[in-house]
Amino acid sequence: MSVLYLDHFGLSTDPFRITPDTGLFFTGGQRGDILEGLIVASMHDEGIVSVVGEIGMGKTMLSRMLLERLRPLPSDTVYLANPVFDRDEILGAIARDLMPEPPQGNRSHMLAALESVLIERYSQGRRVVVVIDEAHSMPATTLEEIRLLSNLETTQNKLLKIVLFGQPELDELLAAPQLRQVKDRISHRFELQPLNAQEASAYLMFRLHKAGWKGGELFDAAALRLLVQASEGRTRKLNMLADKSMLAAYAEGVPQVGIDQVHRAVGDSLPTSRRAALFPANAGDPSASLWRRFAPAGLGVLVALGAGYLLGSGGGMDRRERVAVTQPVTLPVVPEPASMPAANPSPSSPSPLPLAPVAQAAPGPVLAVAPTPPGAPAAGPASPVPAPVPPSPAATRAPIAEPALVAKLKDNALAVRMQVTDEFIARPSTRGFTVQLLSQRAPRDAEVLAMANEVQAALNGAAQPAVPVLVHNRLYQRQLFHALYAGHFETRADALEFIQSAPGAIRRYNPVVRSLDAIRKEPVP
Image (cartoon, rainbow, N blue to C red; front, side):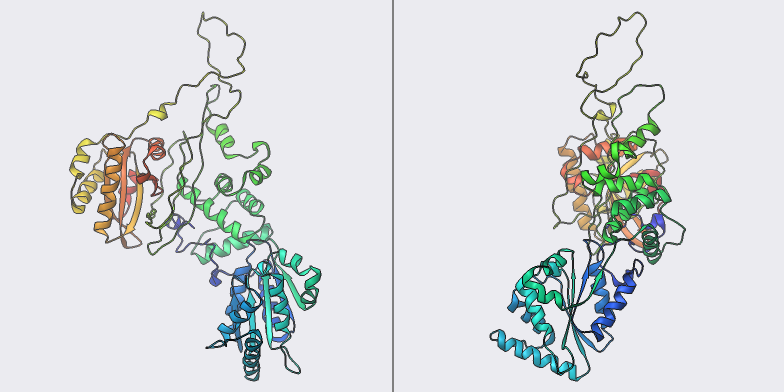
């Protein structure tokens, strides 16, 4: 998940990371009630328990919460996260967690040793609970072995409690005739339901407050409705869409997430068929709303608007994150918020996805209306194929040439680059935009200098007109970071055009456009 927007919204941590974190467990949507039921069933009831839910409903989070809540109780737990075992392997997997030295030998020896350990734990007043995630992926023979394990008992009580977490396919698997005895042992079945609109709103606010949010409703009513509809009430998808929507709001410099930002997040995340169901006939489509908003009245012009975001997640010791790359749009410049550290490239990460091309006119007839000069002959019959449209002036945009600045930066030590950069940024006449490539925790002088030289060489090889590569130190949450910038541009659209045509050495950083005015206001050491 991206955390570039933390400062923008006054947050201390990422509110919508999808990695299960028990500190962010939401008890609404009956999750808390199900957890209490699982604890009671694990410690007191007989038989096997199943928990069923669709993909992204929070089953893994619930299983981790169950393990955490059982830890202080008189219980021993075994957790199997990927139970694609055969019948002998699952015996070994359980034995390894319960015995310091698992027994060797055939299945009978292992089963006898396991039963001996279970009887010992029972005599100590402890319950042994086996929690199996992704149980729908288990082979039928392994599920039958689970039933046989549940038969281990004293004269009065079962020795082993088994809790199965799985997708609805688990129910289908248990409905098979050969597994009817396993199904008959299911003493309790819980089902995770999607969050409704009220529960989803409470979930979002719960996560935001956990992350340090101090304000009111961050998502307006229309945005919230679309989030619930697009996520289908699934917590994982809700996390992803909320994160991307907040990143879109950060990129646009707006204080609240509205319908436009959620549109962009949905367009980036969902398959075409799902988007078509949410936006029938382009109703509410972001590009359509932008057309109505910005097309000049009375002029028939051909406008190509690209408003996509490449949003993703990353990680690492320096919180390497991917950032939004807004594709070229002809819009008024929005004042930029204070910056957060931008993405660092990871040498081990896969090559970045290619940037989407600049949006072009859709195929088919295009209406282009222009006033007819006096005395000009009347237009002939309309051609079924539109005439080629001359290239937009944006296609020839270039960075502001800074040959003197590039000369000062050439082959110089990092300290010199930083001094030249500081002078350039402080210059009163320096206006416009640059492209930020990374913000990396200092001190990493040699590494940052090598990156700057690599980028400069790539720009020189691409015959860019004297594009400077700048290195700037700044403070973020009282910690020193190196920032790396490329180029000087008059408008945001110029900078976006540069990103689109930049060589791979630039695009692998997942660059983001920055206002020089905003950079000038950032705290420096």
